[in-house]
Amino acid sequence: MRLFCFHNLDNETNGAELRAATRPAHLEWAAGLGDQLRMAGPLLSEDGAMIGSCLLYTSPSPRDRQKS
Image 1 (cartoon, rainbow, N blue to C red):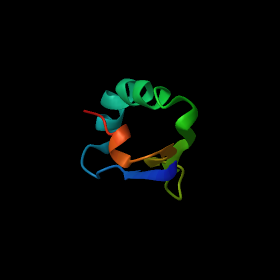
Image 2 (image 1 turned 180 degrees about the horizontal axis):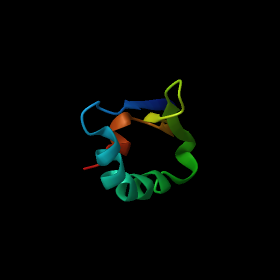
Image 3 (image 1 turned 90 degrees about the vertical axis):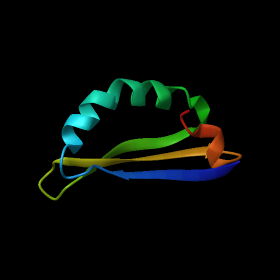
């Protein structure tokens, strides 16, 4: 298994709204990783605002975990 990292930055236009709208589906997808999920959490700005997320997971190929 290889280790992969999703490093996601919110867009500056509607990042907070888009994050809120997609959060339930994102959490469901992440839960589906099971034992392959190694770490996940927010990326924060210097003032503590959420600006993105980072997720580490193991998989034979990055295509095995892409959402269709």
